[in-house]
Length: 507
Image (cartoon, rainbow, N blue to C red; front, side):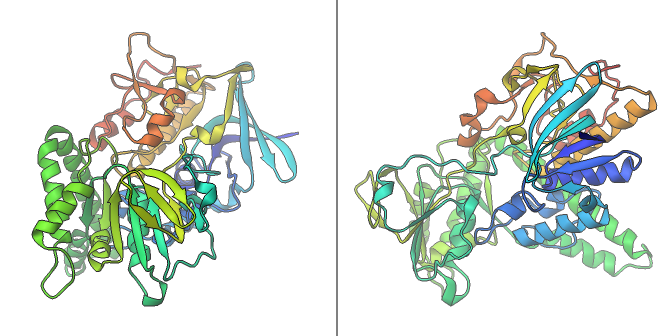
């Protein structure tokens, strides 16, 4: 026996909740189910429990355009983001659609029946769903395990070794010596969270051990523009008399200001990389230099430290640029409880890590913040009329559909801006596509590869987790609509353009 729904959404994280909410709002007549492999919704924001977990994108663009972020806090803690998502679940009735512990393992499109048959593993055994439209919203990384290099001598280490994707709830790090391996968003969050805070809960010493530096910038935790705009609008009820209207106007102004900042800073980094390098380095030096009456470095010491540990060998945005709220990472370093070491691991020892330079880092706890493992669509095994689909041979259309897969959409957010900006665009596209199909009684929408279009990487970042999986991922093209520019304003025109653009074939 199988259950049939009009639209089947895979994943109940940020993308899946957003997709289902949009379907409920704009196409309430459609039957929808959301399949979630875990026991709870929220995706990343429920899975990761390490100290200090937060957004590294501003919440005015990370929040949905159709459901304003209800605070002036720009870089929000993970529990606040999870609360925001679950509020949306309740308000849009998405919580009624989610089936937990439903792991999608396979999907087969039947051309004759014009529908997908989806195989699902559940605690009660294997089940099947049929659906007219399949929407993959499970992100692009493996929820079961992160990327874990093989470290020489790890078996000899007598301390605690953990990956932040599986943080132990009972881990006591107070007064301990901690080494965090990595220099990405997780590492730069963990270090200040464990070095600063309540005196009875901070580490004795924490070291961020990196092979290669990362570009890191400070940003106010609370958006000053948001506070300014909201204060002004709050004082002029005579001009804008309705409270909800004032809130909407304020949110739109703040959101577009942040979109402009994201696009402008990214474009400047790609066109004037040397200028941006100098700007970032200058900011780091200023944050590391001691303030009057405070501990820290001299200006010369800060300059030398920044050049060694905060100057990557690549250009800004070749890999994702990290943002820290209120310079907390730099405050942790100034406090003396945190440090950065740029070196390579020779071997683990019983008491820590021996580096190639000959230095030894003592450690009670080692955190392997070494990145994600790519697993597109939750590892879904896809067939069309019984024939397996090689994802590496497909090409993405508007970064929302894949060639050769009828009635299939996927959501993968931006890598150079807030994830949700792109997720919102995909949501608009899918809703318009389904409305168009219903209006014309179409039962199939299909894109096929154009042999004139050259291939480009789907995710054009030099980050290790992307490069490790590059050969297994779909491609994008060298022109629209087979390529998106990673520029929200340009992509918005492409994604919201006419559905009947001559590329999608409707039947």
